[in-house]
Every structure is written in C-alpha cells, then in structure tokens.
Picture 1 (cartoon, helix red, strand yellow):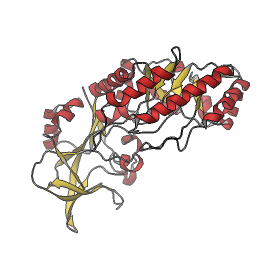
Picture 2: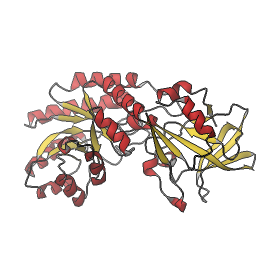
Picture 3: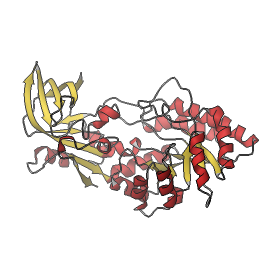
Picture 4: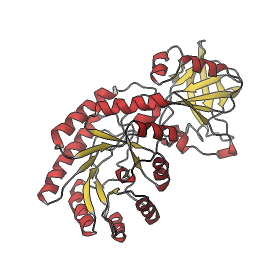
Length: 389
C-alpha cells in the first residue's frame, strides 16, 4: 500500500525539478487543458547533466537517447557540451540535427542488422560496440575505412540492477582477447572496452567490480599488443522515484575513485546516462475522467495509462510519485488508465484523498522509459509536451 503526496509535501522536490509551484497549481485548475500533459524542464536537463559531470570528473557524458528522444533534451545536452549514445539510424538522425560531429557518437547496440550498420557508417559513425564473433564478421564488408570497435563484457555480481542489461548482452571477460584479435583480423581497430551493469542500478560496488575487471583486461590486452584507448562504463545511475536512494554524489564517489585507481591516464572514459538525465525533468499531468466505488475501493479512470506514459510501470518496473493538491483524509483507491482493457491499471491499493471528475493528479519523474515505450492503443490521445524553462 502506498500513499499519495501533497504538492505542499513535495515543494522542495518540485522546485528542484525546475518547476514553479505556481505553474503546477494553475494546471490543477486549468479548465482549458485537454488530454494528458508532459511538462519538460530545460533547466532540469542542464542541472542533471552538470551534476553527473561533477560527480564523475574523468568521465565524458554521452546521453543515451533511448530513454527519452524528445529533441529538447537532446538540444540541451548538446548546448552543455555533451555527446550521445545511439542505438539506431533513427536516433542518429535525431542527434545529427544539433550539428554534432557523428564521428564522436558511440553506437552502443551490440547486435545490429546489416542495414543498420550500413546506414550508421553512411552517416559518419565510427565507434561501434560488439560482443560476439558473428557481429565481428559483419565488419568485413566495410573495407573503405577503419572502424573503432569496443568489446562489451559482463561480470558476475550478486546485486542486480532493477533492469539487468547484462542478461541479454556482454561476452565473458575471458573472451575479450579473442574478440579483439578477430576485430583486427577483419581490418578494423580494437578501440576499447565497455560494460553496462543495468538500468536503475542501486549498488555502486557493481561498477567498481566491472572497473576492476577492466583493469585486468587492459593488462592482458597490453601484453598482447592491443592498445585500449576508451572505456565506456555504461549508464544505469539511479534516480529517486517513490523510495529514497543514495544521493548521486555519494553513489558516484566509489565509482570515480575506482576509475582513478584502476584506469590509467590517457584512456578516455565515457558514460551513457539516460535515466539520470531524463527522468526528473518531466512531470506528467493527468485528469480524472471517471470514478466508481468497486469492492470497497474508489476507482479513478485517468486520461493516461499503462499503454501510454505509464508503460514504464510494465517495462521499467517503476512506481512514480503521485502528487495531489488535496489534503483530505486518504481512502483506499485504484488508479487506472483510459483504455477498455482491464490490464490498464497503474496503482491498486493507493491511499489518496477523494477526487472528483475533472480533478488533476500529477506524477513526478516520468521522463525516462515512459513516453518512448507507449503506444496508441484504442487510438487514444497521447500526451503532448509543454516545454518550460
């Protein structure tokens, strides 16, 4: 059972997200608003970028486009001097609108179709990631230029991230040397190493262990004549949703220390944060479309649901903080979406004050893995973005 939060209770957090409480209060009562709304704060994008950069001073930030590809975020990262991690031709096209040099992008998808490979190279991408021999075989067709190839490895760790990205990708550390040789044999450049512990990783020791493994791999590669010039430490840095977590600076301190201890100067280090940049800069504003007392619980039917912005509950295992303007006695409630599907239920057992049709309910930190994974099921209106400073 979880409780909603009042706007008063989250005033500091809302202000820290670049939002003006006066704007939010106005939205709670604006009769002209039609359909769900995503408030995106430019200043929060910049704040998150700078905060992470300060916490990891040796690391260059390559924003992972996949959690939220809204161009406002991409544009703010570019203005901050950041770079990008891309996984498809579509994402490449988005970031190239900024005018950035494609040679500096990292194409981090370890398994690509030939068509995706061809399009990426045609657009000027030079840095790619592989984790298996079959992917390396695809490199043989590109004889007109030498590509810079990173090998992605995985480690064994007892504490898993909420979304375990090592389950699907990453070779064993003992396979790295063989893959480096195959890259060179196919006429391309072994450029470095990468790992990705997973998304919403709550345990900095996992990064430390992966960095220690990188140290050992670099030593073996040195002995065998391979020059490691780049280490990509992935993303996955956690953000606060309904439960408190370590402050970002506290979380990153052992990671930064491990990089200084184990990765020699001269090796470029990059990271691919997505959630840590995008999550807190978006707030979802919904409207109550209907209500009904069912089996002792008050059901509220909102204009956004699991098939749209709340898809992050399904795919990303998130529970977003619920904010209401009301401060009355809470009652046992259910929040459901607007579709005709009974699966479309976001919160069951929520304690929230009674609301009326037309009332607004807000959800914080809905910027990562929400709108990008939603659909147009039932041909319902998807939320629109409103950009704020």
